[in-house]
Amino acid sequence: MEKKVNIISHIFQHMPGAWNFQRVISGFGTVQGTAIFRKLTEANTLAYREEGILTALNGQINKVYREYIYRYDNGQISVYFEDKRPFHTLQFTQNDFPLSASAGHLCKCDMYDGVYTFFSEKNFKLYYSVKGPKKDYTITTEFSKVSS
Image (cartoon, rainbow, N blue to C red; front, side):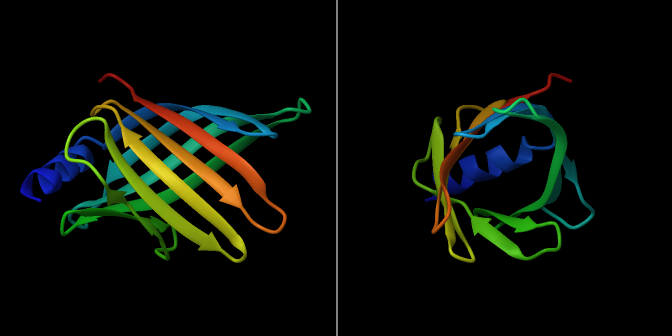
């Protein structure tokens, strides 16, 4: 257990900074952009903001953004919406790279089942399967840390 907690803490300590990301939303389009993890004054808490360009399969192009709060506490990383409502807590299954964690969120009738895979301190992937009465798609986002 101690090694697992240490690697999770290690991952969290390396999150602050800028990350490039590429996202594929099955059947809809792609997003390319930048995400910033910024330390907040509250201990072990990061603000996350991503901004990107969504290119839909129909050719439509839009600017998009999303914000979350990431918090490390008691050996776990939890994610919250920007208004501090709980989103999900990462459930880690391994003690070493590649480090994998599952995370789920029920949004009304739609289930977002996520898998985070941390390949190193500088690369991770987030995969969501989204299922619901009117939803059936996947979201795959690959993150690469920008060298400082």
